[in-house]
Figure 1 (cartoon, rainbow, N blue to C red):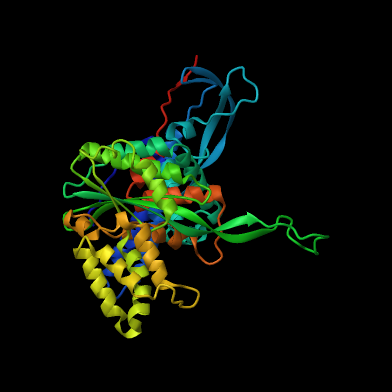
Figure 2 (figure 1 turned 30 degrees about the vertical axis):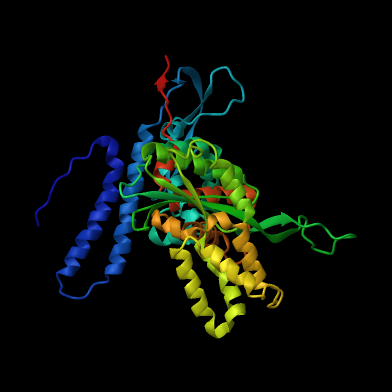
Length: 478
């Protein structure tokens, strides 16, 4: 067998044994393969991954040790610091914990000032010991799944082999950093965003979705029962806000969606302001984009959107025409119940299909259907606790200016708010409404914002700003 010699510098000698062990595992597998029998390749996969993980940890050990400064005095960004401790600290990498000797320094002449770890400072460690890529990936895992699921996955894969409590804590640290500066970060993200060449219009949607919240429960009057909880809580559902901006091509296909969210106690006005600012920035790059606002008939949603989308640049009809539409399928939902009252269950589908066709192709369809409903003399017919025909009449009357679906289709605009409906499901329902789940406002806000970044394909550029490499200069002082 031909051998190859590899020269390894003395300062990287810690890599020799892990590399030798990894190569030996591969050599033994190659030898077994020559016997012509079946092999337990799954065992080989696991073993070689474990050995390469050891190589990775050794590499981190050498690289981190090179960042240490071992001197009695140093200057950090021009300020004199004195060494107060020399000890070993464990840093958390993607491949697992790595222990490295390091010095701690404190500003010279200042008592009880926070100690500074040059290694952590130079790499931008989170919470002092979590390396930046590790913290980013841990936060990404928890926005996708529960911390216990992330822990189990990490242990099986040999990547991020940390406890569920660590996953939870680091996600909230990263989330807090993002929430504190999300407005300037989002401004930078949209400024760097390239509007797809095929985009011809942009739709903006807003909706609400229930979230299970943890809230204090009032103690019952009298002496508490034995073993009663000291801080009783209850699980209640509150309404969070979700938003979506979607770019569409000439065929109405969605090209890209940016998703937004905030918890029930969050600021919906700020969310809408952010969406309006993002659309305004898109228009500076592509003034030809048509804008459509799409919501259900909830007055609150329209008030929030109208407050932001009636100001500049949306107030100039010469340069920007904003079309407002009630989601087509919410309208059909109202009409479907009325059709069953007018035509009976057997013929309701046929009547509803005719109404759908009219709404899609005739600008006078809403008025025609409304006249039919009024003339039916079935307005006050009750179905259980509902009056479907009356409800449909009210819906068509109150939203008269937002139901010209035929004109919207001729202009190439979308007529359905499926993007925000999908956002409610993917952003909130899938992750936050698992059995027994409950959330506090602040921790939920962290998760919603991080998950919105991931679902909008903005994770990496956003994290580049959240976990920025610090500007630091450390020199040995005389």
